[in-house]
Image (cartoon, rainbow, N blue to C red):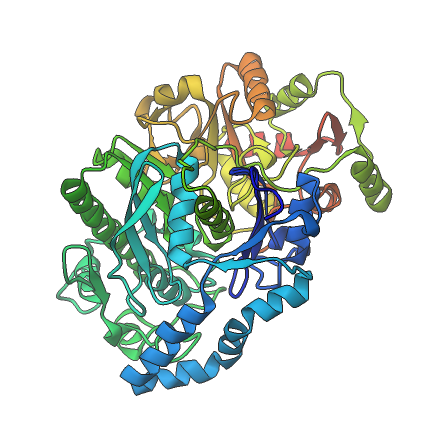
Length: 586
């Protein structure tokens, strides 16, 4: 190893969706980037060459400086467990194996492929997928001792993991969840039924759920929707559950997901352009409740059995902020930490941590809640983007006061600063911002700026000093991954950020989280007396969050955004949007 005291590790995600890279130096996360931000293909499966280049550039290294590549899964374990073993056990899965032959071949040749793509000649360490997930949450949480819980679609063969983190070591507590019994795949299957894109739009289903009634009588006339879902997902042990495969076919045929039994009861698979009916809303509500009931029972049992008072949560299902909010509000744990890139892209971080722990056995968790680890563009890149797009920015004496005044007027601001967020949430560096009132602002943003479904909510970002004044929550929420109720007396002050059930997905902002975003919130508070801004990701439906100044400028040009801010410079369109929004409120 070249750097014995401060090893340089390149984490990598490849082989399925959400490919990514991360860079760690001496146990410190230096950079992380999702490939989708580079090739602008949402949830891309492409090899993360551009993401790797971004990470190395941000760290000031070349590939020859890297001591080890840490990979996010074990391809040979995947082949042994998922395909060879299951094919022998149950013949009907051979059809799936044939469909996935290219994936099997790629897994078998993974080391060769990585070396060919990167030119790397050093060691490559392949880590188990779910260990990468739990490590990605444990080590940056800052918790010495914690329960580590992972829920997702699947890894090599597992579909979840409970582990204990103690003094820097990870011990597996329960690994009973195995394919095809998966809460993540269940959620994806219902996402498909509801007319949305699986492995992409599960968050839309979560947002739809509060419009439904899980206790309504289902179309069979005998059971409620929730009672049907108790049959669909059955608890089979202390920490185990099984998906009733009579309702699904994803284990037999790719991209069909649900069985005739499901459509016989609930109707045909909805097409994207079809109306969303009460049946669809109630299915979403029952799914969400069933997920929350199962996860909360498991976590409560683990708390009682193993005694951990803190929780570090990971896996794609951990992006479900409604579930996370129920966990936080339950009081089972004193504090929870949800890794901001909880989906598969975040396993690049976990792989780095596992390799570093192997090299440095004394390594222990250290709080690292700054996940602005992505692309940071300088003045030269901005100037090049201006020349390419024709958008011209002007330097402002005080960008915070300038922006706060326009926000107070009701203008919609695209806010682009420093390093990009790692993970799917915009946390103040690649954000679209506006004031959280009037209520009609939500509809305007959905229709005219984001071009997405009208029922989808928007998140509030708040000065952390005012968090409990506005929201019923007992811990910080810096990564916008914990839903909570808005205090009833404050709902009329910030109506554009309040969901139909009175909830929101809040982001609390301290100076240590994001100095620039905090300064903007303070300026808006000074201007209006309101410590809250509506914060949504700087993108439109179906596209990744913008990564570069050029992408930001093109999004600005093609939407009804009023002002684009990049660093301390701004470009404004002619007035119009504020009047149209205020008029809708009259």
